[in-house]
Amino acid sequence: SGQLFTGNSATVAAARFEGFVSWHDLWRNWAVSLAGNIAGCSIFAVLAILSQIMNPGSAALAISSAVGKCSADFLPTVMKAVMCNWMVSMAVFMAGA
Image (tube, rainbow, N blue to C red; front, top):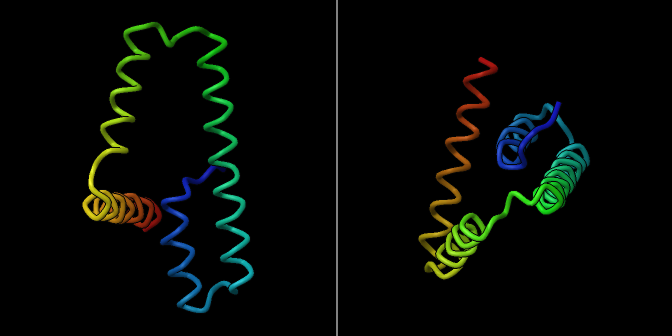
């Protein structure tokens, strides 16, 4: 099954520090998960282009959202990313509990 990199970056690290997986397993998991996420995003982008769903209105919204997120200050953006990762990891943990 597919996994988001954000969930794997915490849950597999926790398994590593508890001794359930090796460092090799951790790095392999992260690499496969990240590569899969990048491939999935790329395929989705190609399909969005081919299906022509990016009309002028939605394209402008996507561009303004990206510019807004990329122009934010670094530290608050990193803190938001960390907190988002915590929420995703907690959801993964609770789903498996």
